[in-house]
Image 1: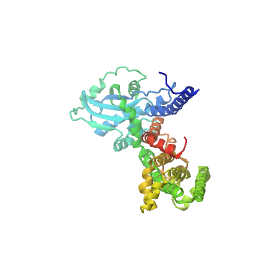
Image 2: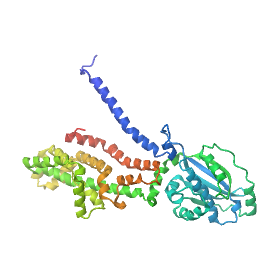
Image 3: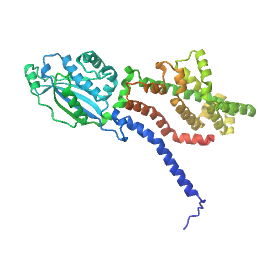
Image 4: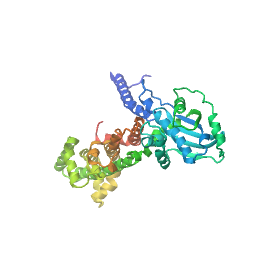
Length: 443
C-alpha cells in the first residue's frame, strides 16, 4: 500500500543541500579545534613539520647511565650536579625533540648509587631559569643547582645498597666501553653523541636508552600549573575569568530579569514600548564608541585595575532586557492575576512564580552572557592593567609575547580555555533550544 503523504517538489534536494552544508560547516569549525588539541600534545619540532602531522609523536623517556666512579671521593652535591648537567644541558641542546622525560642513573661497581629524574613539564617550567642559553659549563651549573633543588625541577633518589668505593670505581670508569651506536636521529642517539663529546662531563657514559610513554603527551597541560614563576599564573587568571563570568551572569539575571518583568507586566503599553525601544537601540551602539566614556566613569569610581571594573558593564544589557521582556509577555496573565488576588507581592510573584516558569530564558541569557564575557578581550585589556586582575583572554594575549613559552604549551592553554564553552553547550543545549523557540528569536 502506498503512503498517503504528498511530498512537495524539491523537498528532498532541499534537505540534502541543508545536510551537506551543515556537515561542511561543522567540519570547517572542528578542523581548527582538532589541530589546536593535536598541537597541544606535540613537541616543539613536530608543530612546524611539513607536511603537517596530525598525530603527535610518542614522547620518549631517555635513560642515561653514568659510571661516577671517577667522582666517588666527591660529596653528594657534586654527584647530583653531574647528573643535572647530563639532563639540563643535553635537554637544552635538543629541546625541540620529542623527549618526555630524562633519567640519569649513577653507577659504581655495577650497582646503582642514585637516580635523577626530570619530566618534560618540569623542564618546560624551569628552562628559562636554568638554561636560558646554550652555555654549558660547571660554573653555570654551580649557580643553577640550588634553583633546581629548591623548585624540585629534578628529583634525586639515593640507594643505600651502593658501595662507597673510591679507587675501584675510578678504575671501572676508565675501562667502560664506548656505548653501542644508536639511530642518530632518535632522541637517545642524539643525546649519546652529545654526551660523548661533552667537555663538561666528568662521569663516563655507560649507555643511553629510550622507551616511549604516551602519558607524557599531557605534560604540556601539567606545566601550566608551574608557570607562575615565569610570569604566567594560569590558575589565577582562570579564577579571575570564572569570577567575572559568574558575577556578570548573576547581575544579568537580577537586573535584566527585574527590568524585563517591570516593562512586561508593570508598565502601561506606551511606556513599555518606549523603554523597549530604548533598550533595543542600545544594541546598535558599538563597544568601541563607549570605551572611553566607560573608562572615565570607572576611573572616577576608583574601580580601574579591579575586577569590578570588568563586571559592572555587564550588569544589564539591552538585548537581555529585551529577551526577558519578550518571554514574560508570553506567560499567562491569568496566573499572575490569581497570585495578586491571593495577596502576593510583585516580588513574591516574580520569585515564586515567574522564575520557575522562565528557566529556558534564564538559560539562554546565562549562556549568551557566558560566551560573551568569557571571550571578551578589549574591555578587560583596558580596565585591567595590573597582572593580578588579568582575565584569561588578556593573559593569553600576553602569553604569546613570552619567548620562554613554547607554542605547544600555548596551545594547551587555549584548549583549556575552550573547554568551558563546550561543556556549557553540551549540558544546556535543550534548554537553549526551548528558550530560543519561546522568545521568538531565530538563529
